[in-house]
Structures are given as C-alpha cells and as structure tokens.
Image 1: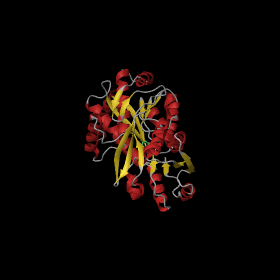
Image 2: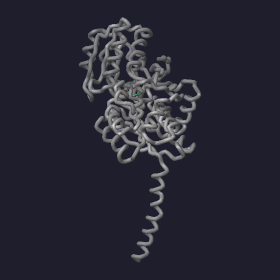
Image 3: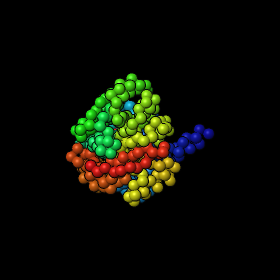
Length: 375
Ligand code: PHE
C-alpha cells in the first residue's frame, strides 16, 4: 500500500516537475497593475481587459522572442501604499521583466521609484501627471500629460463655450486633480479669463456643498472639476441642487460608464477631455473596438485603449530589443515609433508621447465625440 502510494507520488512529482521548469523557461513574465477596487474601480476593470486582450493577441501570434507571455496582474486598489507593495512583489517574486501600469498618477508615483531602482522598464497607462516620468529614464507612459490636457480644457472653455469666469474644484490630496486644475487655471487666465474660485477638498469627501456654495457666490459661467468620476458625479448633482445651470468641464478622470449612471441629468450638457473616441474611423481604432466589444460585450473606454496600447508599446520594444534585460528594453522603448489606438506614439525627451486629445460631450444621456485637438 505504502509502496504504491510512494510510487504514485513519485510519478506525480515526476510528471509535474518538468512542467514547472519548462514554464519558467518558456514564459516571459510581464507585470500588469491597475485599480480593480477602490474609488476608481471601473478604471481597473477596463485596464485589465485591455492588457489581457493585447497579451492574448501576441500569444496567439507566437508570443514575444519566441516565448509565450504571462501577465502577472496585481490590484493596486487605487492606493499608493498598496501600489508600492504590488510593484515590489511583481519584480521580486514574479520576476516581471517589465511592468504595465498603473492608471492613477498618485499610485504610479509610488510604483515608479521601485521600477527605476530595479531598472525594470515601466509604462504607466493613463497617469497624466507630469511628475510620473520625471522619476527616471526607466519610466514611460502611454498617455499625454496634464499641462496639455489642462490647456485643451481651458481653450475649449474660453473659445467654444465662451466662458469668461471659471471656478475649479479638485481633490487636494491627489496629484492628478490638483495638478490638472492648476494647469487649467494657468491657461484660462493667460487667455484672458478669470478664475473666480479655486477650491480643494479632502480625499474621501462626499459633501461638497461648502466648496460649491463658496465658488458659486462668485457667479462663474463654468465649473472645472478635475476629479475622478466618483467625486464628479456627486459634485455635479450637488451643484445642480444649489442652482448652477452652466456647463461643467473636466478631464480624463470623468471617463467611466458610472458617471452618467450616478449623475444622471446633472451632467447633461457637460464636457470632458479624453484620450480617444471610439467613433474614430481610423482602421486601428475600429478594429480594436470590434475585438474588445466582441470579447467583453462592452465598448472600450479610454482606460482600456491605453492599457491595450501600453501592452503593445512594451511588447514591440521587447521585440526590437531582442532581449529581456531592462536596459535593452529601456533603450528600445525610447526609440518607439508606433501607431496605436490612441495615436502615433513617439516619446519626447521626458518619455511622454506627444498625442492629440478629444473632447467628449454628454448629450441625451450618452457620451458623444465632439472634436479632436492636436498638440
Ligand atoms: N489621468 C488620471 C490620473 O492621472 C487617470 C485616468 C486616466 C482616469 C484616464 C480616467 C481616464 O490619475
């Protein structure tokens, strides 16, 4: 009995071992990070789906450098401390040779120093705060940056919406909204507009009436809300409750199916800047929209597109590097010249791609593509 048992055990171990060894040699591990839970959970779902789609496509075509790609995914929970933990885990335990992600600037800012120190190339998907790539030469991103996004918003407010008095509202505890409101303010003022209110609120606030009452007293034509959709939805409702009838404008953080779901008619006639429009007729966009919708039964938002792009940019660089060491991939990434869903990607000296922005209008309870604005 015992002998048979040992024999069977031996056979089982013998059968499994080569596969463990084999997997180690065969797969190339890429880390993927996104917030699947927390204040911006829809960002994580879309992002993970974008990574998964790109990796599945590469694997179906034979992988990269002749090996299959394994995506080691981790949820950063939208929290910088958690972000630091998962970036370290992906590098030290999973042995990722490169990292995709993450979404929120404040979390990418926690992950970037870890990748930089380990010389593991990282490409943030949707983190638009300029400080992210300032961390060092191993840090890239797939999206434009907020000085550009804020400028696009300010010009649109001034030229198209004819706003002359604007008020900004933002989370002070978060690099992205704080930075974006500052960039908007600088440009709007330079254009000749006046920023009549500039009110921060603490992270986690759900009652914005004090800030809104204060800024509305100065009679702005427009509210610029540079937060994530979860805050925007509540703020928009409260602004309407307080009698504000003008347009509200914001940045890419508005991009979530939950925005209209929660805010309803409060965001009707409002606008936000974003990274791409699924209505774009370019074949690369239409092909992506079709494949993504087919696989996930939902249309891809900008987070999904940027994640898909980040994966393609990284895998293209690894292919051109012809090697898996960080320095070779980093050098190849720097030479990227690739048409992806959200535009043509070439990195500037700060490893930021120079790309267009689109403006989305909320009309009839839907997001409608309005215009594209070149850098
Ligand atoms: N730009 C945001 C940040 O830097 C993240 C984001 C991008 C959110 C795109 C939604 C859509 O934190």
